[in-house]
Length: 108
Length: 123
Image (cartoon, each protein chain N blue to C red):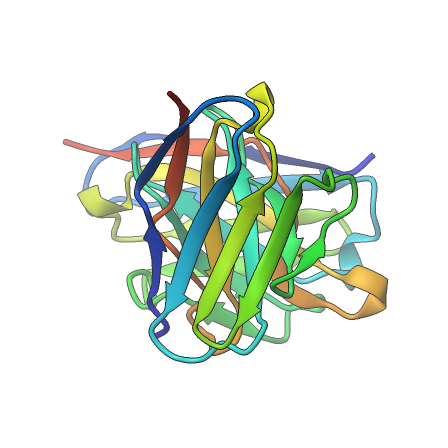
């Protein structure tokens, strides 16, 4: 089973700042990684797929990079609506499909 | 527009059964793989089950294998999850989700989710 480790667990930033979130896989997943955003009381929303492709309707301030075992989600300039929890998910070696434990981006 | 609406959650005693449903609309259900994903209160996301577009292939998380059964009725645009021998650790919000098919090539990411239905296993 591929274990995804996200860091940091919590990121405290101000609107307008840059957010850098990390996801590390226990073995190579090539580029088979996605990122999701989840706000309280809502279902997750797909942001990035195949490590670096933005899903439809996702603003350009969200970008993904990486391959193999190390991946990054960058939010170039935080908007108020971006404060949420972010999860990575791999689909390289499955079943099982696995998610990271999440990074909470909170307002500083 | 694409809609997924779960139902069937509730409070159930350990060892009992529950059946969740997900009614879909707004897309050609019979051409998409579907998934169940759950989230325990205050915790992260956990994939539960997969079913192929035609129901011929099914996979399960180890934590539910042998207890849960995923199924679909393409004529009724409905996805189901039969949950037997429920445990306290199955307590979660259960989401149905559609497999993501960018440019016609399908992948095991999730592009549309329902609002979730809460299952609480407690005596």
